[in-house]
Amino acid sequence: AQSVTQLGSHVSVSEGALVLLRCNYSSSVPPYLFWYVQYPNQGLQLLLKYTSAATLVKGINGFEAEFKKSETSFHLTKPSAHMSDAAEYFCAVRVGSGGYQKVTFGTGTKLQVIP
Amino acid sequence: GAVVSQHPSWVICKSGTSVKIECRSLDFQATTMFWYRQFPKQSLMLMATSNEGSKATYEQGVEKDKFLINHASLTLSTLTVTSAHPEDSSFYICSARGGQPGLAGLSYNEQFFGPGTRLTVL
Figure (spheres, rainbow over the protein chains, first blue to last red):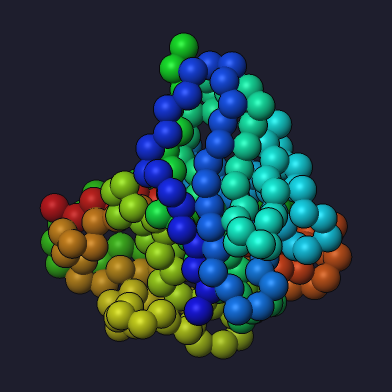
């Protein structure tokens, strides 16, 4: 079964510092991987997704992630943290397609940005 | 494009009552809708998948008689929590998937999430 593991439930960075949120996946087939952001009491917003087209994926708000098959990783990065980046981030993997897909989420990483 | 709304955004009810949550795709037709629940400080867990015109498929451990899902149309799905109890208190999030490849530029497989509904059962 496909799954994702997020290392670190809480990450704190200073404003302007590099953001690195870790995600490792387990999949028996080429995976479709996603990063979502959730602000308090809100739904999920898609940051970026990997669908095998390119290993380095650029998303919204300056985030990007690199798919590394050898390391089974899909870490999320941003060169310079902004206060508005404080939120919870979920890595996810999708199985199946169309109306028979299932998205499995990681346990989430709460990002704190220190002024 | 690809906006999904939920109503209500929050609801408080007494134990034993039923609560209905609506999920609407505002600018596209959603062939499939998904319902998730999220406990405090935890991840989202898929409850059920609903394809329009078919009965919902529930995940293991989710009681279908307690969580009634109706995919009434291509733009509306409802989740009814019957005889709610305090342990049903949670954040319920729906998502919707467009049915046609390339429809309005939407990805065939991408899920678009609603803003969530906070349910508190007293």
